[in-house]
Amino acid sequence: MGGIDMSDIDVIKENVQFEQLLRENNSNTVLKEEYLIPDTHPDVQMILTVEARPMIVSKELVGDKIELEGKVEYTVLYLAREDGLVANSVNYTQKFTSNIDLNQGEHRVICEVECNVEHIEAAIMNERKISIQGIVTIDWELYKSSEFEFVKDIEGTEDVEILKKTETINRISVNKEVELNGKSMIRVPMDKPQINKILNCSLSLHKKEIKIADDKIYLGCYCKLNILYKGDESRDIICLEDDVYLSQEEEAPGVTPDMIPLVYYEILNDDMILEEDDLGEVRIINNEFIVKANIKIFSRENIDVVKDAYSPMCLLGLKKDEYEIGILQGTNTSESIVKDNVQLKENDLKPEQIISANATIILTDKEVIKDKIIVEGIIKADILYTTTDEERFISNIKAEIPFSSAIDISGADDRMKAIVRANLENLDTAIEGNTIAIKANITLSGKILYEITKEFISDVVEEEGDKPEKKASITIYVVGDGDTLWNLAKKYNTTVGDLLKINEMEDSDDIEVGQKLIIPGRAIF
Image (cartoon, helix red, strand yellow):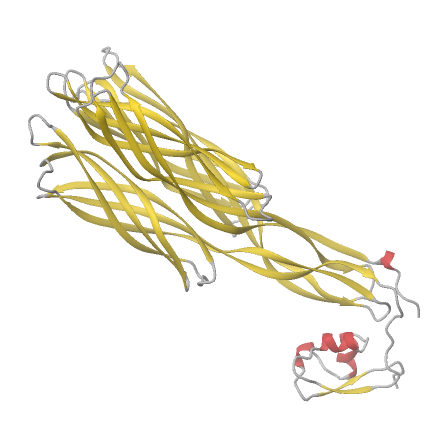
């Protein structure tokens, strides 16, 4: 009998693309700048609050590092002297840069970045000049985008024995950016003064979600607008709010409901226009904004791969390669309510009414334990209120509230890595005696990743040399520890089918240590 013709063999291969987390960390950038008060604004008497909105503008791979460029938009709310104290605000933008140094072999990386202002304060240098100092924390992850080819099947001949194995992998099914457009129109009611000046406009996203169905992705989030304005012919600061729902449906061929969707939303820009109503009063605020959604959808697939193959007719060479594969263990979100009562100090002015409050969440620690991620952080709140003081009619108080929470992710353990993002869903404040009660609703989103090294057969070829011969006579073989029918069939150049037949066995899993097996030779009697 001759060998088999390799041209008859059809080696079926498949390609897999996946993402692997190389490492994640954070870095700090110090902000420090001096700013002049524009000529159109009155002198600074006292600074109330500074709101800082950071964003990454560009990411660029340059040599052995990733260069990040960002900007922080500041709104400084201050008291000015004009026939008594009045509120005013001024806006500045500061650019910043930061670098992530890459290790050897870290090319073709994907960098994901989120930034938060960890600390911010402003000081008066003179009545026409202020300084702003702060720290921006940049949380980053580096992912490697990898792909490899493996042998899925061998067809075209019955003379090749194949052992298959099922491997579980994550494949990236969708990786795209989508822009959602939002519009808000706020009318100032007649019981409030018309708008003299907009002091601040804060936009924040909450109730972020992504849902998937067959071939479709549904995106949705709310954008909360918080607008402070100075009333006309009054010193009052008035707060207006709106909550706008943005949603979009995207076609996504091949997506199924059992896949794992991930989305990261961020506000790109917003434009505000003030308009007059029918009576000629400035009472209409139109705001248009764009929210960007970064979508990734991972499938968890069981793939059949060829684990081993041989032929009793010829020498088959199997080209094997080892790959380190990134696996997404799971994702989940958890909701927490964080409460605290902020004590007013002796020199704090007594609050009469709260005007507005904003907060940021800084995550300080995370730890993966069995089936959970334990997360610790601080909510930094800044509360603006009217006072009982006749002249200093407005003041603010800052608070730092620590919290601890957990995200359940089945199968997690301490050898795995966690990525966590925090979002402030809602912030309620109330005056209670000599304290300000704060209640924050936060959502934590977590994903757990790990690496695993697996060997795959990438090609099958016929090797030179004599084809394996069977032994001349029957062998009686005593099954040892770790023996399988497959290994014995390969070793003695027969087939699992022949071994089952001659030993009158039904199932290849039926063998036990010490059992005697008949192994056929060239001559079968």
